[in-house]
Length: 222
Image 1: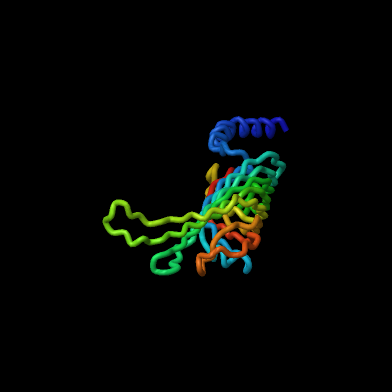
Image 2: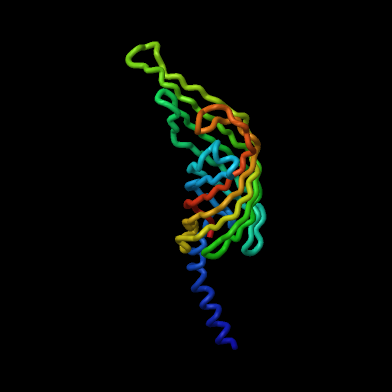
């Protein structure tokens, strides 16, 4: 008994420096902290599609944990996104381009351990839609002749966001593993005052609703 206890004590003493060395490599990020950035593929409803088409943009989010218990963490998530449409030629001397960007803030419930870490989140924020109508004035070298850009702006519209996603660890040995991020969001908002791609004329303003598929990379805490 005494011999076994002595051997166990020797193992603990010998392992202490290794444990201290390993603790130096532990992530300084708290469990449940995530950052991700990537492509944002927008898929609007049939009613909203004539206003924005099917654009692709970029998006990113940062999640900071508030409460962590076991493998689950409840945190606060902030997200921003920006989408630009390709230019649409309405006629020889006029073209239409549209952009919209926004952000939201809300809770996120995450699994913080394992190679695959699912999460769900909700948020509320604002999105700004605006359209630029570019009119070619036929300028050549005349100093006082400039092309006319008419910006038709909408108000900032409220946005509700519901998201489900996954973080997949690509480097589990790192204290801050690299993650692949995949998510799908349902986004609903107000009635943005924007122009159509078809003819550039004011159109009835349906309520904004679209899905958002995000695929990208990020980092998290081990």
